[in-house]
Image 1 (tube, rainbow over the protein chains, first blue to last red):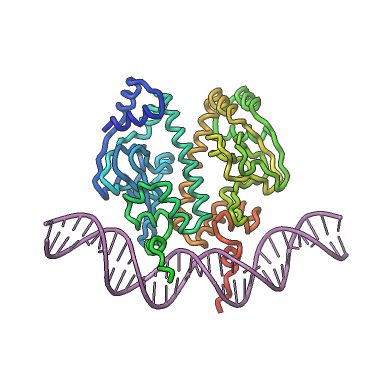
Image 2: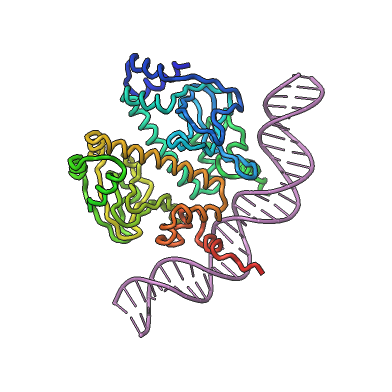
Length: 192
Length: 192
DNA sequence: GAAAAAAATTGACAAATGTCAATCGAAAGG
DNA sequence: CCTTTCGATTGACATTTGTCAATTTTTTTC
């Protein structure tokens, strides 16, 4: 399973086998079935998680029992609750598997060591953080400036893969609309 | 003006006067009157900007001429268009001064040098990035899961200062609602 | 492949938010 | 001090989106 991670890192940086070995020495592995939790609300997030295969989501559950998905993540993406991880506070979110998934976990402290010991990896992680920031910024922009329909169109364009693999109700949740509204966007009334 | 920046850095890290001197050697200064641009849509953002005083905003203008404010920033905050800065692409956003502002600019490349030469500063900047990520994540969560009223209440609670200094129409724009809707939230119909 | 469960659709209606125009009030400039 | 401009409010109405319940369709499980 670590091969996926190696390939991922090699694709983005120039790194030696020795260095990859160091990273592997800090890694733990985990397999999740559909619907299994990686993190539950109230828990403290301890790991930076790399997805070797599968499909995951991060979401909250509000007072009325409604789920709000803030993020999907799939192969070659990282997932964690950064707020909980960074500040050691209980997470507001749940993370679970939409599809059976294989994960590579790096403990918070070991991650720090790994990033310092293998600077190219540290740089890679910082680059990811920068890109994630930009992606979030753009999502904020979209969500405050677009109609439900535009949001859905953009979602399909940006994440065609998710549009196929994720149940519609979850996409609606990610977009901040109800499943019924999304269904109606997709099946407009015949115009006459 | 650099004193504000020094105080800011000293508050967050242990840093020597020599190191602060190095940082100063990379800094440029800029003063903006109300409504003056720091960055205009289409331009490439070249600087990391620290706000020594004043109040700034980042926003886009859509096809209908409507503004969408994605961020306010004030004293001791950083502002830039990270996407444009990072990737060298034309910015989708405008940045201008809501109030007369004093800025300290660090050119992209010089910033990199500064962060490497003064590691505590580098760490500080990375920490800020991490925190910004978390703030954005929380904003996304809020905007997909809250009503207009909740968003406004949270805004006032989180940024009481902005709530006083920023015109209501801009707050509405930040929240992704119309000024009329915000006005009505604030002045509910007498109930009988 | 039948039964059960989950997901998506649809209808009728309610609630929230947007649009446009008019008015009011405050404050900024000459 | 007056006038002009900008910001905020309000009303009437349109549009979008949500809610709830009933069906239909698809997928899963045995």
